[in-house]
Amino acid sequence: MEEESIRSLKRMAKAKEKTQTGSHGVTSGIDDLGDDLMQNILSRLPALSFASAACVSRSWNSLCNSLLSSPRLSSAVSFNPSLENAVIEVFEKVFSEPIRPHFALASIGPSFSLQAALYLIDKKLGSRIPVIVNVSEGVIGRNVQTDQFVEVQWEVTTEEEHLGAVSQVENVNRGIILTVGFLPGLKAHIIPLFSQDKGPGSLLLDEFVMDIRESASAVSDSTSPAGIILFADRETDIKPVLQTIEYAFSEDTFIVGDGGSQFLYQSYSGNNTTWQTDSTCAAVGLLFARDRNKPGIGEIQFHVMLSTGISPLGNMYKAVSVKSNENSTWLTASRETVREHLDGQAILEDIYEELGDRIQYPAFYIGVTKRRRRSVGKEKARWMQFHEFHEVLGGDEEYLFVNSVGIKTRDPFRFYISDSRAALSSCNRVSDMLKDLKLDCDSINNHASPSVAHCDKRKVFGGIVFSCCGRGDSFFGHPGIDSSPFLKNFPGVTLGGTYCAGEIGRGKLNLYDQDIEEGGSVICSQHVYSAVYLVMRGNLSPFGCTGAKRGRPAPGEHREERETGRRKSQGRPGHLTEMGRLFPILEGPME
Image (cartoon, one colour):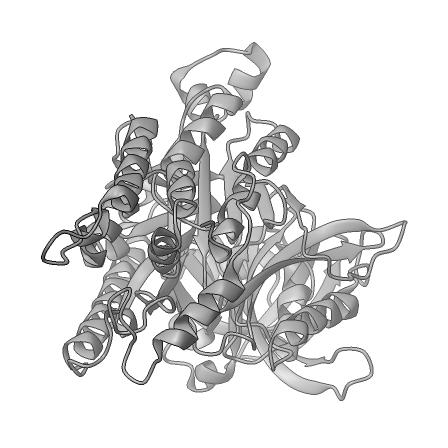
């Protein structure tokens, strides 16, 4: 059906050449359909047929380039138990409409092979497309089979693994989500973070930051990228990584991601990255840098919003005695108002008394405010404050036990508990913020001058969400809560995401506790029981839109100059078997 459609279009184009001028000088042909109708027709073609249409003529190539000029995000979910078939399904859906691949993110279920998934996706996309594939805790997106939006968490039990049972749940664990994006005016690169060995000080953080700065400055006028989507291995302590990134980059740089999953990546950027033969990859960042050669194109804006899912509980404490090993910390503490030395059991008794019967079986965390000196290389160090969460593992007559390390004597901390009511209220606040964003876009578009081209109008074109694996149906008691703020405000706009075990989102402490006076200056970038939303908006058509119809010079533009530009842009048709080679042909139309 798709091949027949493109053959019909080609026949119509050829008919144009055979149609000659009549007695009244009237020429008829496919061009008489007009640009709007032709763009409508072309926009409905799948990616491969669309690329073929772009090779028909200069005029069609110009229309196709205009369509591909708009920022776009496309995402799809498949629960096919065959990895190969699942990849085929999500690719067919993602590329069912024209999109020029700029980057790709994929998350798979634990029953799929990470290596096989990366191979299949990279083979489909072709060369020079940065790809990151990770094993997530679940997926959030639109099902290719039902066209319904789903939020699914993987549920592999130890018993099922031992028995080798094939169940409905296990089939669900074989799902995949693929998200592909095109962000005009930005360059996408992958930068890995290496570790020489396990333990504190093993991460090559300075080298990681310098590689990012070098990559950003190579294409933009700043050493700070527009944003970073970060993935870290479960064995990596992401806290010092986020601290160093906070020191190194502008507050305008967004930072989101998954701080606890297996991952693999493929990068063709050609950047020089610091690597040593005895090192392993501990984390990887997909960074976006603004292209200095395309100023203003797309005008992509990123908005990060956070739905919190925990509530503060009880008094403030201060760490008194602290011990730690590789993965956990033992501590005693005192209340801020009382100098009494409290062991782990006494601290927990205080918390249980404060909690009462309000919530059954909550997850406990301590939020520790840490004042630390940070620097990169030989740069001047500066004092910064970070708020970091540590899960409470238990306590005895000596110590309170929490996971992870990095707590020091005299660090203040407070208890937090998972709270579905607080999370629901926070989701409503995110929905209100998204509503304001939508109204802002509408206001800009409605007040635009009639002379402003259609390409200057703003819209939200996509979103990515990283949600804690502790949330979902069982946490809220209702399905679809995490995706509802976005879908309610932007129905039909692409949203894709994952459940993760360590959601990352650059923010401040006052998102959690507005009673703390200095909360607006305390940085909080890794969260628990939260959902982090990355929302993207940009111009409808950042280039290829001149404010005039095709074939007619725009005001102030001479036809001779346009034709000269066209001749310079001519090229040869590209190879149409790989996505990576598919769309560059649109930059060089075939006559």
